[in-house]
Image 1 (spheres, rainbow, N blue to C red):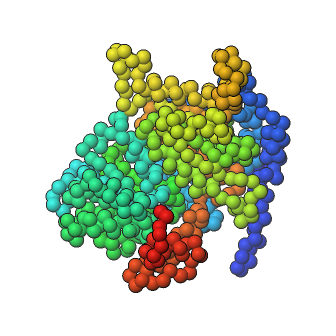
Image 2 (tube, rainbow, N blue to C red):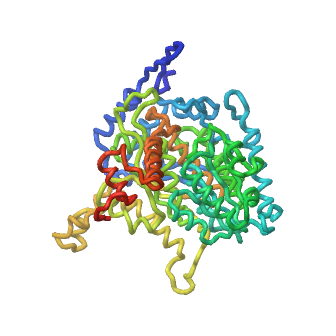
Image 3 (cartoon, rainbow, N blue to C red):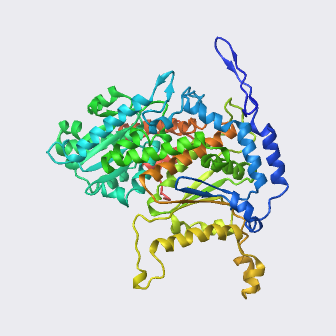
Length: 577
């Protein structure tokens, strides 16, 4: 297929497969983009004066408006990027994903998070078997159980209503759910959670346990243990800790009433003391960082906000899935966002990307996208294991609204070039308007004044001539100059609702996929997280032996040995800590 960016030639023998592959940087489109960026792109100050260009560099879907006119890109740039997408077969790859093909080749798995938010009439299969039916069976089970708990029909061991949820999981088993929980914590959705509390316990640090449980009473607490295998070390230690906290006050029999599981391991769930009937399953075609749309997120969030609220979230995510699969390239928001990510990372050589949400409720969005994007695209080899001759992935970070302005925007304006995604909402979930008492604007308008000003400040900058005209002393002009030409996306959304929270999530999930498909990497495995875990087991074994039997620290390099000795107190030396 001429539009496919890599060609596999597989030679099958009884024991091995051999792959050859053409990387995207050998394609005509990639080389054209390299020549294009080398020829020079005009400063954004000049590009923003071209009204025809500005009018063309935007796209919308439902209530989401994306303006990318402040990217350091011309109409020609976009033409070449769409050529790259065509040559890479990006949209075809997403169709293969939706068809249940095992595009996660290193693990031999399908990638079907789109099926998690499917309509019952949609068709998704894996290994020739329908997955939509099983997905909706789990959703029905979640709905029934969450309604029992919320209504008080399901009670705790002492007959009290269970109003407080602690979700125990780590990484993909909590980041997405925490993002959604925070995003909906004000506004209409929050009214459905009145009188209820939700906490997330992820870090194995015992301080995290104290923070999660300090305002909780075992009598009114329901713990949701989230682990596909029920063997994740951090999660299971925290689960056992919470289990003991419940048992110490309520007795062993309380576990079945106060703990449920999201897992795919019923035997281990039963051994833990949780009734397997209260296990809500998910599948190996659900990657952790893409699992918030599964029981991983929907179970605890339905307990807190109600199932109908979460059904709206799923509908929002599905709407973007359908948009991705059906919209033409020049109107396809995830495709455009992904292409601009490749442009900035691979051609403009920007290694970082910031997410600036001008909405306090979105404070956990950037941490979630850190995992979605960096665990997916933080790879150094192609699908066939060949070392890549170009960089992939970006360092993602961010803070809400004006908080970030008073933290790291200094670097944005006068230091390194960091592409920024600005996300803002037309309506506030908690409007305060004191203009009748003398305030010039409402609180939300004050926030959004900054939202609209920052992208222009980053684009235009401020040069020596302007500063001279303002009478700035000559010696201060270099310090007060702003070079501008900093690329940004600006996304304006009507309101922060369950539906749009799902839409924004899906936009960024698919943006990550776009970039991975172009770079020729597997965005759906994560072997990079394994080595530290393996070495951690060795350290854990040593700590247990030293604490219990005063075993000597052995088998580590000199640096680690010295620090372990200091940590365990097995040597007498003055601490510099």
